[in-house]
Image (cartoon, rainbow, N blue to C red; front, side, top):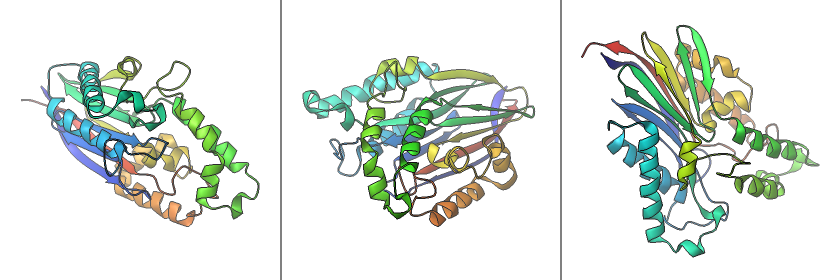
Amino acid sequence: MAINIKNCESVCYQGSAMYNEDIIGITPWGAWVLDGATGLNNKNLISEESDAKWYVNWWNNYLYKNINKDKSLKDIMLEGVIRIKKEYYLKLDKNKIEKLDMPSSSIAIIKYCKGNVEYLLLGDCALHIKNNEKLEIIKDKTLCKLDQIVYQEMEQLPNLKELSFEKIKSSVMKTIINNRLKRNTENGYWILEFEEKAIEKAIVGQINVNQDIKLMLTSDGYSCISDRYNLIDEKDLLNEAIKNGVSSIYKTLRNFEEEDFSTTRFPRFKVKDDSSCIYLNIGMSKE
């Protein structure tokens, strides 16, 4: 028996920044969403465009070449961290790199193996599952809680309605930096970077596929329609995708962000974040 992909839909669109630092991958052996994060020092050390774009593209290429290997996701990802770290530091002077300079990425990845779907998550990407009508959402909420601290600080700014997006963000930059410095620490959050220990801290598991199941992998620039804007209940997001398609959700999201272009109704890190989603309907088939 083998995994059979019966339906697949996806979106991966650039937000209001200069480059799309999200990327998605879909193969016969698995799928992934990567949501890159730029350094906060406004430096590009390894790319003329965006270090985060370089970072997620590196991982995308690596996963296309390695997802089909007879190894666990943890082993595949750990080997990738070792490789990318070596490449990164060969090109740069390690002693001149500050922690805030380094790119990183959230990730949600699945791998098909022997009638199961293996998954691994780091950062704030999410995996939605519908199995035998049971809905489940797998996501590390740690980073979301840190983001919420920033949002609350933004919302409490005096004269918020009169401030520009740039002024709102600069007013809370100290908190944003403090949160970023908690990356890959025991008292902070775990994310894909150059730290092998993060892979050990990832959320991992398996889903047994004995009937058709629906899966949805999202970046936070897509799931924010639920967990930031409250336009769709988080528990209903996958059903909405099944009913109307992931592109319909994306259009609703962007229309709302256009209406709140000043970011004063819902203060946030970007006017429009990069937004990515993969929806899959999978089952079993005889080889």
